[in-house]
Amino acid sequence: MKLHYKAQKADGTFYEGTREAADKFALSRELRAETETLISASEAKVSSRAFLDLRKLLPVFKRVPLHEKIIFTRNLAGMLSAGLTVSRALGVLERQTRSQKFKEIIGGLSKRISTGENLSQALSGDSAVFPTLLVSMVKAGEESGNLSNSLFSVSEQLDRSYALQRKVKGALMYPATVIAVLIIVGVVLFVKVVPQLTSAFTDFNVDLPLSTRIVVAVSDFLQAHYITGFLLVLGFIASLLAIVKSAPGKRFFDRALLHMPIITPIIKQANAARVSGTLSSLLSAGVEVVSALEITADVLANGEYRKVLLKAREAIQRGEPMSEVFRAHEDIFPPFLSEMVAVGEETGKLSPMLKETSTFFEAEVEQKTKNISTIIEPVLMVVVGVVVGFFAVAMISPAYSLMNAI
Image (cartoon, rainbow, N blue to C red; front, top):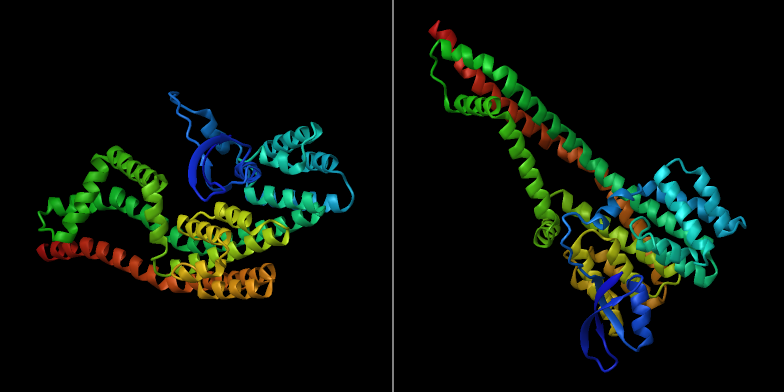
């Protein structure tokens, strides 16, 4: 791939350039051989006049669920520790997997290895499927001669990250379901129930209060312009997604997530758990601290956390402790993380300290996700009560006027 990069020369000057390389780590090794230091790198944008770039769609078609990758990594580690060769273990996994898509991907790995590539090179050739964390851990395992241990370690880390994601999503599933049901019931009421009541009020010429007129106006719009309304909703959702995916929108959304009640503490502790756990796995596998920080930054979704890790990488390159960087950003990282990193740096046991930190924050997230339903449930009940109460008052008030008129 073609990478646009920023690097520092031996005399301390910075410059930018573009170069072909397998990945950022290969580029870093090439520059290091030239006595230069890679600062940052990203895939260079390729201008194309084609209306549809099929390469952009490739990751979508090659997407494999994370739990399948975890099972693949764990089973591969087990077979390698039992004495099977990599090519034979991949052949067994190719026959065992039920997913035709993943079967083809594993077959591609086998072909690459049969041409003389090692496992990390084969995995890096399928970067749309296999994360950088897995590739780096495998490479470290190949260099140290403990490939099976590295695979066990990365499968454990991926499994913990997957479990953390499920807990957070599970905590938000209940309120999302209630809101979705509330919207569906509201649409049915506006389309089916309100028109029948409105016709009765019109026949008897009843004066309608403001709340009723609002409900009737919404109902009339949905009936007369349901296609327009549907398109407006789709347009709003598409616009929102486009804004979130844009660079300014992504930055705004990442910052907004760190200033939301109830959700923000969970996000901070979940990211702290992921950072400490990933760093611990990489360092224990023998990956250099600078590379480990860069890889960990790549696996994080929130750009604010990536910035901090890249600052920590630059601090390490300058010979400064990374605990100071975490301490300077305790607005997004809990203070406990910076303290544990500082202790790990002082004692030379950074990886074990980070693993303990990850375990601590995972337990905190688990407890908070259990409590969140208890907190959100009364809030949702109040919201549902207000909506139902408004609708009831809007429809019952004219009914009383109608009964008095009769």
